[in-house]
Image (cartoon, rainbow, N blue to C red; front, side):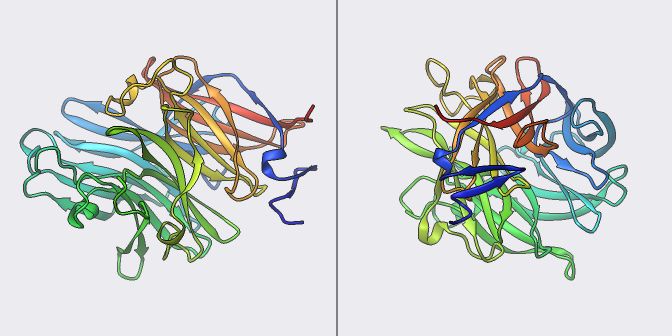
Length: 390
């Protein structure tokens, strides 16, 4: 029997395909957190996250840590400070296996005098002392637009750092510039570049996600990547048509069995991860691989609201709740969704990390997100227990 159809999870045997497995989710207390996006675990066991402080004349990004699995947080250091009208954020932390801590972020000039000829970049900073001090590391990609046309988009967004089992450090990001140069107006692809320590630069850009059908609108973005059994899987949000020039957001994935050199969208398209019912949307997935071989993806969705807002509104107006889905067969099928938080229906930027299982639980997760109603970050533990089908 294949691993996909017979799973041993921390002492429990769950027989049957993923669609036949039943889990009960128990959400813990909602508590304040220090940040939301892409939680990481440091070598000493601490959780780490980042958050931005935006003021009229500057933007500062800080790193915070927790030594009690998200129960309390302490600010450790400022990662980057940018003066004047810069757009800075979308950060992603990576704890490398050689002990270096990296932080990737967007650094753009696209307002005021720069609005018609914007500058976009994805940059990286580094720390060798656990995030207590930071230095400039590199620029992954940068684009200087001579003149932005009406309604045009050529930006760089949403970086995600990942280190493969082979040791390669990769940076994934949303790219509107490459599709624009290739003749796809207002499209967005996910591009990956690999760090070359010998040359001291990012090299070999590869498109990790875009439609197989060139006539299909691509807005693939907000990537996160996991590795399981030698396969890289990239989770992301994209759009699909639901009417005359109307779209909704859905969650998809692509995979690579060549350490990121080639991706499945070329021959097999993009695999569905989760689609909300009817005309509703799901956004901003963050996927992780669990220690038992399962995959977990947390996201936000408006599917429990009477009607959705337009995709063009800002995230704080989208009426979004936090949910997650699980897969025990490498992403071929998914369980859920399981509710994480619906306190104010104004959530965004969710993240998930595995934590020590509760007594009797198969596994436990810790999720964070931003609550736009309170203008603050929150976290919640979710424990999963076996449930007998009745």
